[in-house]
Structures are given as structure tokens and as C-alpha cells.
Image 1 (cartoon, helix red, strand yellow):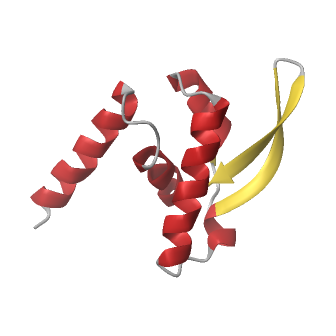
Image 2: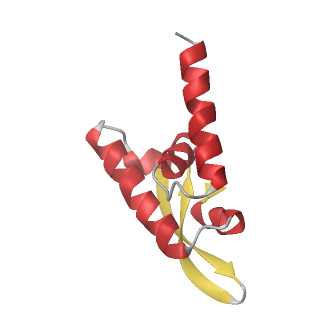
Length: 93
């Protein structure tokens, strides 16, 4: 599995570091409760942003989706993502 997403990329979508952190924690709890091998989907790393080193997390495609499903729903990117996932799910039924 490729871990091609960084949780910190969500800063560009208007999320705060706390919102991102909380969503990653929730996404990991979801993964754990379903028996997902978290090491394959979440990898703690450090990133450099604006000359600062921050704690970050590399995410698989699935983990990135779980993070987006567990973040503050007041942001349009989150609502749009959740609606698109549900529409796709309903189409496949």
C-alpha cells in the first residue's frame, strides 16, 4: 500500500492542526475497531512547514478518506466528500 497523502495537506483546505489531529485520532479508532492493520494505513512522520518541524502522518487512500469523514463538518470539503461517498455507495447498491 502506498502512503501518498499527508495529514498536513489538509491545512491547505482550511483545517486547523487541532482539527486534523482530532480527525486522525478518530480515523485510527475506526480502523482499530474494524480490525484494520493501522501500520499499513497510518505512519507518523515529521514534516517541515514554514521553517517549522511538525508532527504529521502519512496516510493511505483509505486512511485519508477516514480522516475526511471524521473532521469538522462545517467545512465544505468535508461535506462535499461525505455526500460524494454516500452517492457512490448508493449507486453501487
